[in-house]
Every structure is written in C-alpha cells, then in structure tokens.
Image (tube, rainbow, N blue to C red; front, side):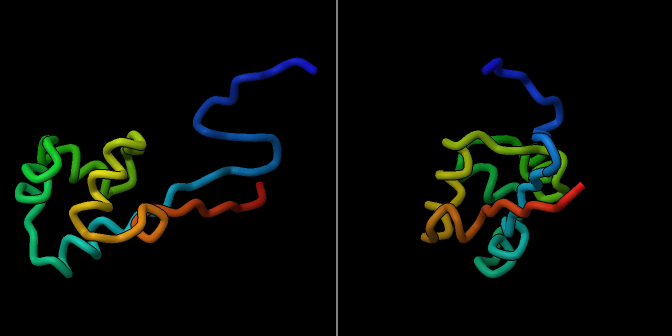
Length: 84
C-alpha cells in the first residue's frame, strides 16, 4: 500500500472541517481578542484568523485555548465531516 499526501486536509471522498467555538467562549468569558492572545502567548491576529476559520491551530495552541476556558479540547474544537 502506498501512502499519499493530500493537500488542504482532504482525504478521498471526505473534506474535514475544523469547527471551533473560540469566539463563543471568548465572549462568554468577556475577553477581547488581545486578552486571549496574551493569555496563550500569540498575536491578536492569530486569534482573528482562528475565529475566521482561516487558521488551524497546532495541538499545543488548541490545548492552551481549552485550558483558558477550563473545557476539554473537544468541546472547543471538533471535526465536521461532509461528503464531497
């Protein structure tokens, strides 16, 4: 069996989308984008991109965000699969 790299996080027949609830939780905790960024050691622009869905966080970053909100990582981030 040969392995193949897929671009844009695609697999045969399925496009995986990362769903995140960062903006929802940030509002719930009454944090600005800048405040959240400072707490986890990234720029405000990283938070902006994450909330817009144009940035997929590393596992460590996702864990740090979940820790700020005191929630399991899978509550903040989840995978949504759609058929092509």
